[in-house]
Image 1: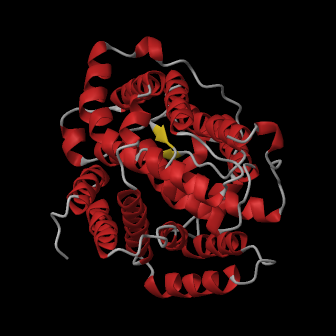
Image 2: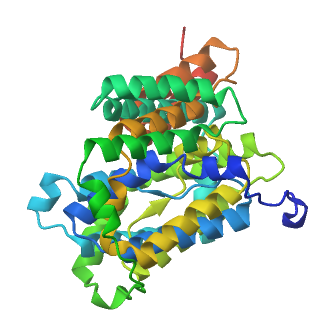
Length: 383
């Protein structure tokens, strides 16, 4: 392990600023859904993201991401869960129980033990599948305005080949112009924004045992396999592949996952993780140090403290076509990270088949990859 004092310092130059916004494709849609559908207070939610990103960038010194937990987010705002009476308190309860669960995995070393069972071919398959799932979701978002999105995607690919031009910043400027053109009232609404300082209130005291139990059973446990594959094993692999001079350990990731979820739940936030796709998005658009995480964290912290009451208006500046392009490029970068698979046909089978499962369910993909690898090692597969 490299000593932290010898690691390259964080930068805050133009590429870091551009790369800082490479994860908006997942962040904005999920946060918007929590605020608009579950009526969660954006104050604590955004402050939790901001503080977590600043701490992650400062400690890891790589573009270490902080994302909403996707399975929990999708379940929490689904019609089935809403009809069953699942509310904001259960989501906060899920963040608290998620934090406790990951601290248990870190302290006992159990998470690292389980991670050691995942063969490299299965891990590469999970990374590839996650990349394709991001790309597919990006295409779905781009389909809202296919011609505009197609032109933006082509422009982004061209600009990424010219490092002096920050593709992300150009993309965001164009996105804002598209939003202002397509929503005539948006300029008036933005002009009416009045920053109001607000400190998050503490949420633990209002949680009941029912909130904790429902959050744990319906949200935390179903999310665990996805977090394990994407935000624990895959992010460790992705970070150490891209930044071998700034390696991280599974135990450190488990600790940070646990601690940031405890902090989030304390101020009424949502469950969060270190998704590998987030790092891919930051890196794709120029980020190379933890400066990008600190920049994004500072923006979100400021928005949470001063603009939480108007965050829905702010998010309208980023149309789905632009967010789809960002998400597609993040998925592409992530899928490219799985290119160094073994030359054996059995290894390629494990990678590709695991990737297919990962598009459907990451937890099932990890289990399949382990079993398929063991089968190939014992000569049970004849390909």
